[in-house]
Length: 150
Image (tube, rainbow, N blue to C red; front, side):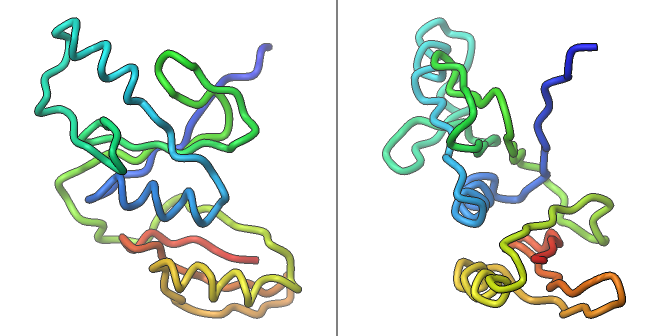
């Protein structure tokens, strides 16, 4: 079987702010879809109301994505073809604990510094866990999505 390409899609109130946070948190690259959007606008396939300007470039109003900087991407669309997070705008707020979350692994010697760095970017510490299986810090991103730093 050929491996299946995938991306993790995360609901968000502000997809661009979430993409910016996670790009900085993971060292990922913000995807630039501006050339693709410009082509679709010229063809009349999308309307200007479906777009906005982010960091001086045309972007989707309700979608933003980040990708691993070493992974391939489609040059025409700007979409990543490897490790990728896509944030989509949804109207409802997060109300319950995540059923899925990311674990970041900077290593035990770097964990405290990484927690401090992420908190400075808008994340919050929810709790510190120390169990027989290990220690980690449970954090929440700026929209309240839980993740762990191990």
